[in-house]
Image (cartoon, rainbow over all chains, first blue to last red; front, side, top):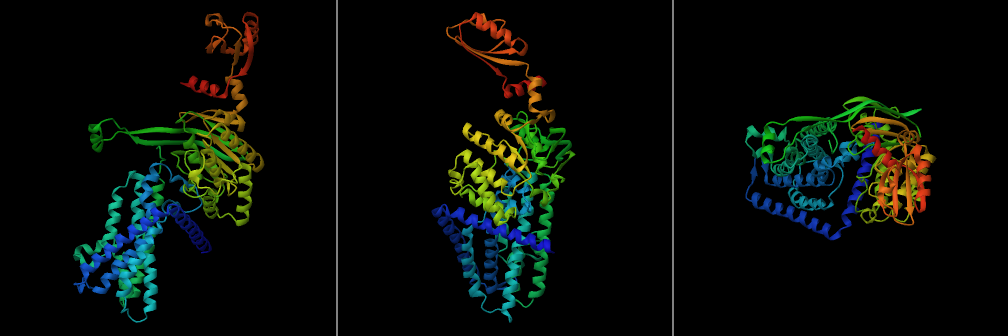
Length: 268
Length: 325
């Protein structure tokens, strides 16, 4: 137990240093960084406008009320923001780093190689997603159930679980780069995960819904945290969320270890 | 006592045959011929604590692959290795905290930030205490004379300065074993010399075990007493550098400058002409005949200057490898 706590603290300290370096690195080019901030804000703002356009005349869909629909999109944006502040840029570069051998530095350091290989750069401009998410969530979370503090706390933790699940999905796919060399298709999958998670899983036909709760569990990146925040079924959903988060972390870590054992060098 | 023990280490890579042209590319979608290449073949050696060993071989000989297996980056196809008692490819944290690898062609420093910020990251990764970090950083930057450049962005540093900063980053946690893969590649002569001086001093003071691969024979001559030579993945020599030279060097180099031009045909019987200009020749002469040839030159030709040199290590190595072909 002591060792686990030590490892978590160690990884946290290294993460904080990487975040600090990422911020410093980004600030080296202030105008480019400002442009990135504007770009992300603009993209997200378009999403907000579309959400307004789509949902303003829809009282409810798939069992989700109009307020909940906005929260689903906002929640998905928050998890996306967390992913860009942690592993997402690393995922996008992983195949290239495997091909040119740069990943090797992650194999020789006394930490999880998966962590060091994927947590390489944090994109701070994605903090703007928090603003757009707040525009969507705050006005529509007015009528929370009783004991709102508990709901908000569980919702916050479930965002972290959502982050763990999205990390699990995408880092598992990234592991394939050890075999495939290139993973251009990963960008498409990432974009689809982002898009699908912005809609309640219940809008899909029943025979497909299980997909979004199991093999491509996008429901955990929008719908389920929203239900934890807004319904009285929160403890059960939260338990499922926690279990899913741990399961995906474990699976992705196992898959990574197996895949990296097949690494044969940039020249191999 | 051996700190590195390598026993019958072998690494075979699989790859697919690729022929030129679109047709061949399309055909390869349905049928690919799998080929194998043995990068390291049944290599065994052991290295004692504190030794500085040169690892020599032509391009593609298997030097880097061996270093990558010893640092745990690659898994071997067969054989075994122990570094500080650990199996490298188990990647135990206790092991990883005690060694470092520096690859001349790959950098680990953050490009847009001062090197000192990358050092701070390594401090956290290796869990170096504040006091040790401060002391080690001061010591290394003094030794490498880079105090004034560590707060400049890495992209603004020269190649030599960058390599020095890479060495600092790699040594902050005081490793017991250091693997250096072409650390002076691409550097100018002055930077190469500075890095050599640093490595020599570091090895002597810290007793760090160092394995060095380099294409520059000056590195090997200046730093190592023992060399391991590898060619086509197979070890062909392991022993003192001096013995290797004595064994393979049966010629000396005669460098003669004349006060008047002489004809090439007049040098017949004086050894192999390596270089000819009417007033300057370089000859390779058998050790047994060197005195006789030198005396003949002095008596016969208008000699302005005459030098007898040892064959360069580079030509010895070239000779060793060409003899094997």
